[in-house]
Image (cartoon, rainbow, N blue to C red; front, side, top):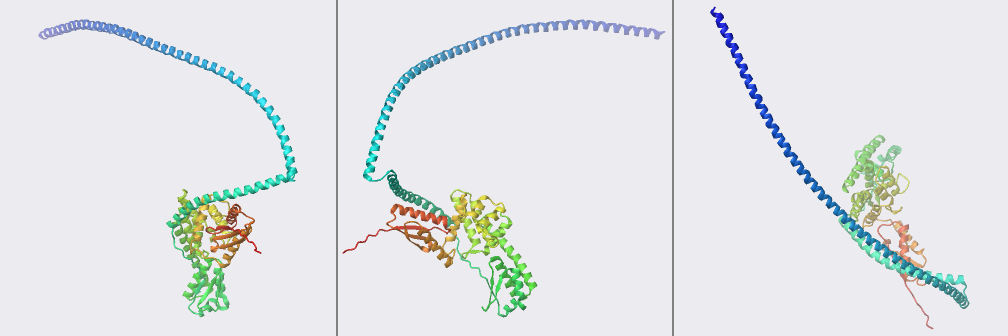
Length: 520
């Protein structure tokens, strides 16, 4: 009973609490709604005020922009009006100038018309005077023919002859003048360049002479070299391609052959056989084969040393081997390989001094005589053989042309060819560099004198100074000073075109007048 009353009281209290809470929540909601409405109204008021403020600012900015646009428009209109005024002023000036030019043109037309009238009158006068002059010339020409006794053709021939004589004298005088000036300038510059190059590379000259003799310990060795019924010497000659000459000369056997490389192989092989003492066909073939390999290696080494000495790189192996063969080749007792090295140095220095590529000059100089390594085996001179060899191994056109034309056998197309020819002449003509045979020396002297005597007006010609100078005696009756100068130049030009020689040849023409009378 008591528990039911307590439960009812608790339920009532709970209901009352719930009702109270609901009432309080309702009152709070009303208050919050009023506060939110007040806040919203305040926000709307502020937004309205901001909109009004921004509208006023936009109106002010629009008015200012309108004022600025109006001012800019007025400025542009003022500038356009000023430009139009200037154009009108310019057009007025041009119109005045055109009017003035029209007036000047009318005046010039009047002047031209007057000049044309006067020119017509003068042409008429000139025609009449020309007719009178032609008549007068005909009269004088007939009088001259009657006085001189010459017809028109004879007088023309005589006049042309006199003019030819006068022109010949003038040509001789001009040749003397310009030849002297050009020779002095060219000689001085060429002398400076050559002396500088030769002083920078001053190599010693030794005239090599290839020996073809082999010393033997005793004359009994000759019999062993010959062998039974000559089988040893036949085997040796077959293996080496050279001839072995055994005569009565004591202690010496002569090795003969036109190929210097094969001759050297034979000489060294024979020395080894003599030192070894075993001489029979199989041993001969073995020694010759071994010596050939050694000589090939030696030549390749010599070619590489020569290329390194002049700093020429990138040469093909066959070209290096051919270059090494020049070690065994001599020209007028001058070693061709040393000569090629010297020409390479001189060509490189000359090329640098005249503004060309020194490396190309050295390469051209080193390979210019490469054809001498094979001229015994192929047809043609060594320039053509060397040019073909270098062309096959893809050398440049400058190098090929230098090898082909360094003896002036073709027209010089590249300056390196002329430089190589100059360096070749310097190397060959140095004192002690070469020795010339008596027969060739005499033949060269006769060629110089024969060419000079072939010119009209030359009485005698004498080669002196070992062919370095030619004295020519000109006829005093057939020549004068001017024609003698022309003869001197023509002889020098003929030497350049027809002869090949180291260095230079000085031509001196002497014209002497002699007068004689007989006293009775």
